[in-house]
Length: 109
Image 1 (cartoon, rainbow, N blue to C red):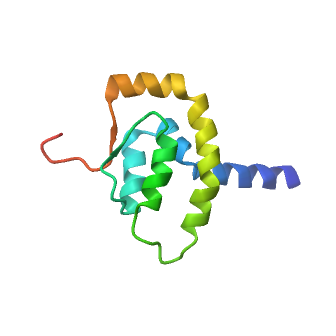
Image 2 (image 1 turned 120 degrees about the horizontal axis):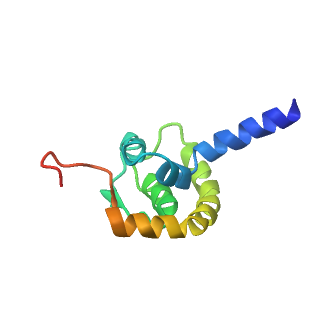
């Protein structure tokens, strides 16, 4: 039972990880997550996108609950490690697709 609870906690923490949100999810899902936070970022690079995701969350209006900042600060080193491991993939995606847009204009640019 303890192993299952530990795995559940680990997976819930990992699902909030900025790198998981940007590298392993669809672009639209990552953009939607950042729009929910009302970030001021317009786009983020795909290289070290997890760190950029976390910094964009920090660059948003304050959360009334106030618990988001400590979680993001805990996520920064995890995102840095995952982003470093995923560099070959994210370098390719950056060259092929460019930055990940958070807010799309109606004319498609």
